[in-house]
Structures are given as structure tokens and as C-alpha cells.
Length: 274
Image 1 (cartoon, rainbow, N blue to C red):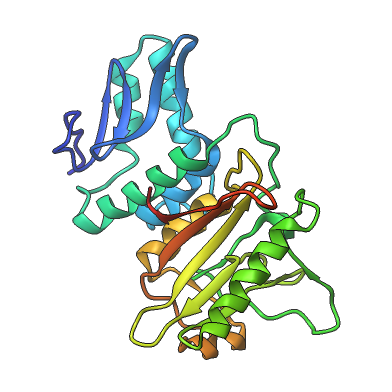
Image 2 (spheres, rainbow, N blue to C red):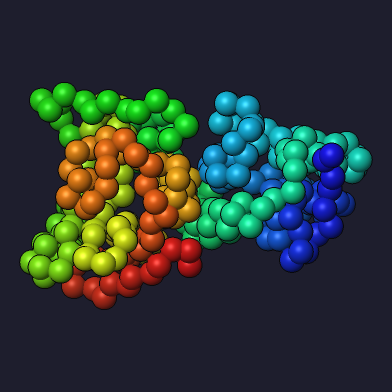
């Protein structure tokens, strides 16, 4: 039986009331603003749908449209209709694993969401998307096809930072650093660095440069999935150097973000979620 939950720290489901809509204790789906009720950003909704709603329709924008309907109903003063839309989102209460995934998505969205940011379309190969375990395994592009990375607005500084960290890891003799390079073929997403030190699990590192770096739309959904594990995999045979098996889903993987504003400036390292 579907039910709405009261708002607050104990919530394990959907709350829809006169002040908005939430999923779990803290994840806001619809909020009240000075211009009326506003739905969650499309990229955040996509990430939540992937992480928490595996039984949702295959359309990646389904949750986003549901939150828009809730917002429209609340703007029209139709709270009961908004609650009906909310009841369609979840068929059962959230479990502890779901709550952890929601917290991961929410943390990343708070850390990197900028609604005015120019977006790389989700279906663009430059968008930084990993292969999802719910889909057939991706096939590596032929080797003679050019490798591509995210669009680099740092005049090469981003790549220099990544290369220097890779060299440091490998020169230390205590870790294997592997730079993940996307292709213009089926594999179209990647973290900047994967490392593996003896006795420790594999870890991922994203490098962000500039004064106000943000996450790409696809990073906002694949980083939480990488963190919780069991969703993403790679068919790149180089991951065998890290003790991973091509085609098998990754275990829960810690993710770190290196913030390097520019040459000669101090950098910061933060563990996700922040």
C-alpha cells in the first residue's frame, strides 16, 4: 500500500504537503520560492531515479516530470492532487540503502549544482557518462578512433594536474594510478583517476580546476552510483591493473575531489559526500 510520510528526520518515503515535497528526511523534490513552487533540477531527478527507483519507467525524465506535476498542482492550490502525484512515485518505504543513496545524490547536487551553468547534453559523448549496469555491456570503440575527454576550458591545466597526480601515485610504489580516458564510441563517461593501493579498495578522483568549478550533469548521477556500488562497470581492460574485472559492476568506491584553482595556487582535497 502506498502512503505519504510526514516531513522530518524520520521520513522513509514521500512527503507532499502545502509547503512542498521531499523524498526521505532531507531530499527536496519541490520547494517553495519567491516565484512559487519549483521542482528539482532535471539532472538531480535523473540521478535519484537511477539510484532509488529502479522500477520507474525507462524514460530517464519520468521522476522530473512527476515533480513538475506536483509543483504545478501546488501552484494551483490543489494540495490533494499534488499528493496523488506524490503517491505515484514510491510503491514501498525507503530502506537504509536507499536513504544512503539519496543522501549521496543530495550532497553532490548541493556541492555542484548551478542552474545557470552551460550544460553538455546528456546524450553527448562529451557528457562524462559511465555505462550503467542495467544496460547491455558497452563495446570499446576501435583503437584508431580518437580519444576524447570533457571539454577543457583550463587551457591544459586540468590535464596537467591529472597527469601530475598519476605520476605521483605510480612513482610512490604504493599505488597504481590509472587515467580513465573516454572515447567517442560506446564508453562515454569516466572519472579522471582510479587508484589502488595494496590492502585498500579502489578509489576514484575527480579533478576540478578554476575558481567556481561545478560538476557536469552526468557526474551528478554517476558519482553517487559509483559511491554506493553495484551499478556501474567498465569494459576497459586496463582496470585489471586495479584488481577489477572488465564487465563486472564496481564495488562501493570512495570518491575524492581535488580542487585546483590554477597554477601556483593551493589545492584542496575533499571526500564525497561533502
